[in-house]
Length: 175
Image 1 (cartoon, rainbow, N blue to C red):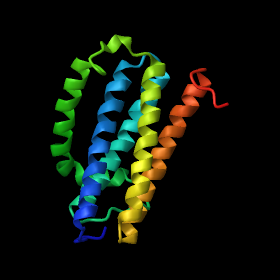
Image 2 (cartoon, helix red, strand yellow):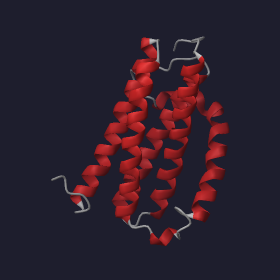
Image 3 (tube, rainbow, N blue to C red):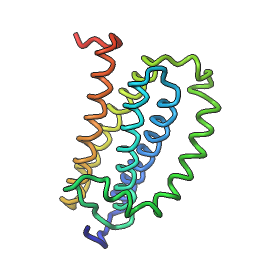
């Protein structure tokens, strides 16, 4: 891991945006895994939530001036970053609790179907992937661009997994 990387103001702001996006992804996947009626969907969302937590840890590392290693996956970083992540997780837990009480747009949670949940998360993944695409072009450090590109590819895989689930359940037709 490389330390003491200097970020421009613009780069720092872009990373702060990505951090916010990742926090929302963790929040939504955790909440939706509890709301989903299908066991397969619950499992899928729990798995993706863990990857989103890893992305959040990578963004936090970048914000602290360190470039995480992407070679062996991000799971090893989770142990390293557990103490730093506790502050972020606390914020997510309180946000998650509020989201669980409020539901989406004030609607009761029971009104969300598995298709609604999947559609929201597929749209979320499309948006997040696009924000990473933009951010990648704004960083001067090629190693940071590589980290962001790695995360973006994983976000695309999340969308692909949701699409495949939806298609297998007759929720989405790609015509």
